[in-house]
Length: 79
Image (tube, rainbow, N blue to C red):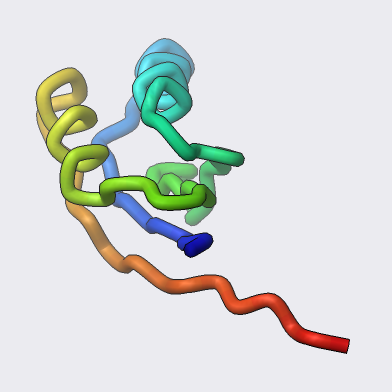
């Protein structure tokens, strides 16, 4: 099951952004990671079978603040 996970994190500099990216990519099943929002403080993680709560917990340990905003299932359209 593919999912799209949105996590709001405390990201103030490029070093923090790089560290958050490394943590997210290290999780099993992650396909892509992108930053969105006006301050680029929301991480949008796409993956297959990713544990969203564990991801938020890992980010919270390193960055100090990470809030799980949403988890959506991605359905593929059949032609």
